[in-house]
Length: 238
Image (cartoon, rainbow, N blue to C red; front, side, top):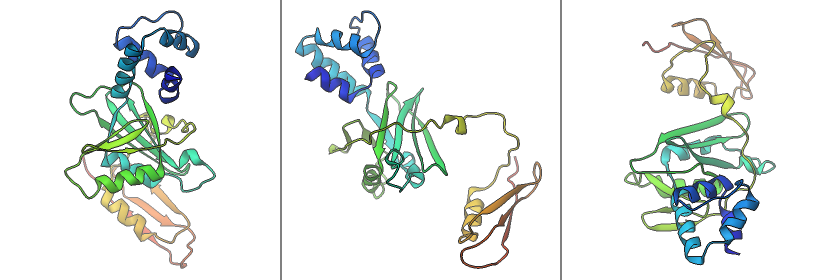
């Protein structure tokens, strides 16, 4: 039962890396069957050490910036895997991402000093992510929450969670840094105000007219009126 619980809570790669870090021998291929045989040979005391190390290494520290991706999560119950934010570690960064398939927000922040993580992925349901926001938002002194596959903790208080089942869509091809056809640097304040200016429009068209040239935004059809709205935003220099 104890070994079964380990496989239920942690992915195979996480278990394998932890055994390597603890300098416990691994024989043969590291598939589930092989790891299952290996773990069942250990004493209860050794399994306790393994479980403690698994738990320690899977803690992800998420900030209010990570939780900001909630705005892009789907509200459509027909696709439960999108009613969540994915949080994971990659390289020396903690990453959060959410999408409703029409837009996607991603936040990356470097680990705080002393942090060490294995590749760990947590699919946090939207209601749990919003609960985390209510905890951290009114307290500017709180910079991070500790997130594990079983709970979120802050200031010594632990809240049990149930993760969303399923696999988050592969999305990295959309955010990878590759050579762009054109780049224009805009002030996000002006861009936000322009989008508010077009509130009620069914669609907008963004026109790029060249390097260091103004960006022109035009409204398509509108639910509210037939006004012909145009916004011009000058690029930032440098």
